[in-house]
Image (cartoon, rainbow, N blue to C red; front, side, top):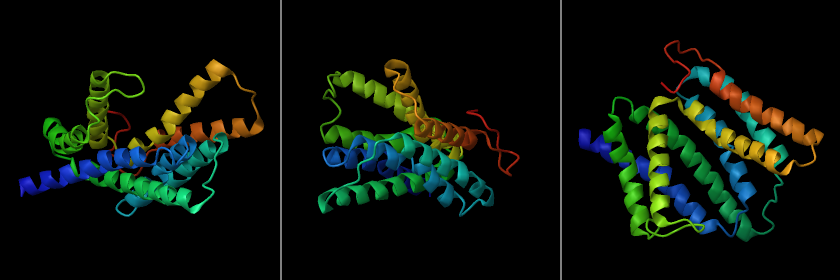
Length: 228
């Protein structure tokens, strides 16, 4: 039934948008930013493995996703948790990463044939209302006014839903490598740190991994590598 499929989309939207937001809101003081970035950079690897269960042509993208993850790990100063209190949120990060990967694959399939407006309403309204009820919608964050947060968040969410529907999950997951790469590029321009061999290897692996995830063609001839 149609209402049942839309209800499932709403639940999927809550899991994809709401669970990560609540998780990071609860463990901000227990996990470093670098561990969070490293954890999310593993999403492409998880997506490749999950999507390969239904598509035989996906496993060829495992090596590029691992290369991107390895490159980022070479660039980040990681500090692993030192006690049990730190390992518990680290385990929660792993569960969150796997949840995002699984839901991105499922939502891509579920959104096919659904109009953009209807898909946006089903996927975005539940987590949006949840954030408002929790008191995060009208408050500022980091010195920014609440209205600006709402507008920028809405635009980002609309773009995410559109990309989820139009791009294969493994292509969509490449953003978890591209965003850190862009941040690193800006950092190099602004601060010009001392260049090392490790840094060069990390940048090369991260760049090649992200580029190959976007450019490698799979066996599905109907798949056009673009944002349509």
